[in-house]
Image: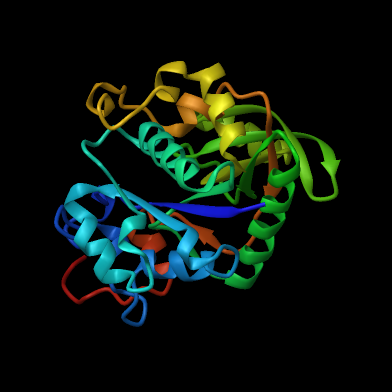
Length: 272
């Protein structure tokens, strides 16, 4: 089966101001030995998916930055949203466009501004996710074992194993209270969502039709009228056919100054 990857690169990087800016958000900062997070994301996905089947969802404002940072990318694979409407409309619009080109591929969705320490392990886990999604009617989320009761992430409760390494999701909880997050951490049966999921284009469309039919009808023409909603609220919270593969490969969303330092970024003097 054909494989494709979608990298989400339209975010404004507001949590790392003033280092990140509207003109150059976090995913385009060259802080890792002269490389940017979007470059590293593209390169590690190229281990799993052919380069010509990697697509970028971004804001029209960042189209040229994407092309500058990714010289190996076909410019035709940049899908520019006409307005910011959060991740659900952006992912839906892009996945439908990819399906229009490739038929019914297995599509993996990944953030452009996350850091992963063990890229070989990431490639193994993502490859497993694609293999499962190609032959099943589930969406596959890559879950991260929680290390603290973080209230800023979504949590997936894991049930029984469908096959070795693939676990049925029981429910999704987005940004729980501290009390709930502590309870989830103690239980040991929860993982963080990491903005990574894989599924066939038809599986994704069917899940959207069931959970968020308005988003399932997105087009370029009606994009600006779409609700401003994340994929977690629009889909993950309601979908019944989600499975998880654990991804313990040194993931960080680089969402704070401490996380930025821990990733090994070279932070210019005087910024913080």
